[in-house]
Amino acid sequence: MARYPFRRLQSELAELIASLPADSRLPSEPNLARQLGVSRATLREAMRSFEGQGLIRRRQGVGTFVVGKVPIIESGLEVLESIETLAQRIGLSVSMGDLHIEQLPADEESSVALGVSPGTGLTRVRRVIYTDSRPVAFLVDMLPENVLTIAHLQTGFTGSVLDLLLRRGTPKLVKSRTEIRAVGASPEVARALQIQRGDVLLHFVAYLYAISGVVVDYSYSYFLPGYFRFHVVRRVG
Image (cartoon, rainbow, N blue to C red):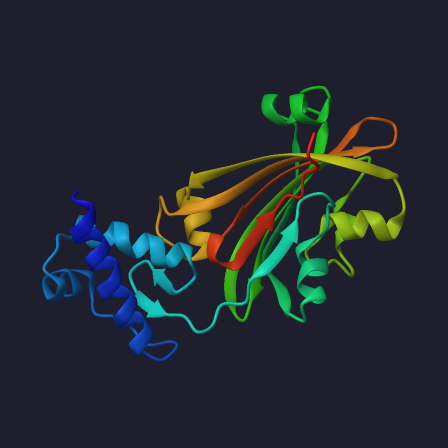
C-alpha cells in the first residue's frame, strides 16, 4: 500500500471524524470506502488506527460511532497501582461490569505461573472496566484458593484484586513482574470490549509476589490504547 495515499486517507478520515458530534454514526464501511475511493481493506486499516486513539468506536453488527473527548488514564510503571486508583487521581469515574468469578483446577500454564501443582484449586476473576459507559479494559486474575476465595469477592469488590489484597493486608505484597506487548484482540476479548477481532490492544501479563517470594496472583489484562498512556522513568546508567 502506498504511504502517501494512505496518509491522505487518514487525513480525510480525521477531518470527517472531527466534523461530527460525539455519538454520531459514520456511514457503513462499504459506503464510506466508496465515498473515499479506497478498498474496504484499506479503510479498515485506517479505521483501526483511529479506534486505537479512542476517536471512534466500532461495534460488531451495529456500526462505527464518533467518540467525544477521550479521558486518558496515564501512569508510570515504576509503582503498581489499580485502574481505580489511577482514575481517582485524575477525577475520572470508572466502574466494573460483566463480572465472572469461578473456581477451577490449575492447568499447566497457571500451575507453572503460580508455582502450584496441576489441579490445585484456583479462583479466577474476569471483569470489564468501564469509563463513561465505554468498556476500556478486560482483566483476568487467577489466585490460589488459599489466597482468595469466592466468598472474599461477594461483598465490596469493585474490580481491583490488588486493592482488595492491599486492604486486607495479607498476604504482604512486595513486587510485581509484568510483561507488556501489543496483541490483536481475540474473539472473547473483542466481544467484551465491543471492538473488532484483531484490533490492537496493550496486553499486560503480571505476576504479583508476596514477601515470601511466592506468586499469589497471575493476571493478564487488555487495555484500549486510546484510553491509557503508560510510561517508564529510567535512571541513566
